[in-house]
Image 1 (tube, rainbow, N blue to C red):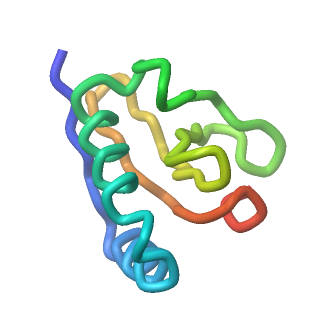
Image 2 (cartoon, rainbow, N blue to C red; image 1 turned 120 degrees about the vertical axis):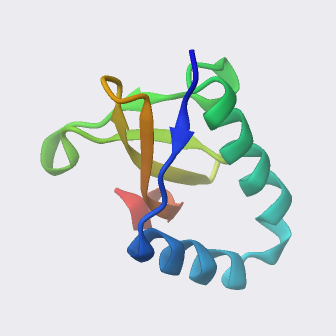
Length: 91
């Protein structure tokens, strides 16, 4: 099964801002994206659906403190990142 990441302009701006604030996380962030594209169900990503006002989105972990929220479009095999940041920022 082949997955593809689809980056919106809005997400790219958020990601650049995130990496500017946290340059020490760049390697972990890029590894998370690579793993997400290769196998979004890998246990280390801790993929889970969100509820409440973020219902319809999913979250994966960069590390214990930082997350990426995303639309997980299973029909089209597309993964669309929505936001990146610490727990309070993305939720």
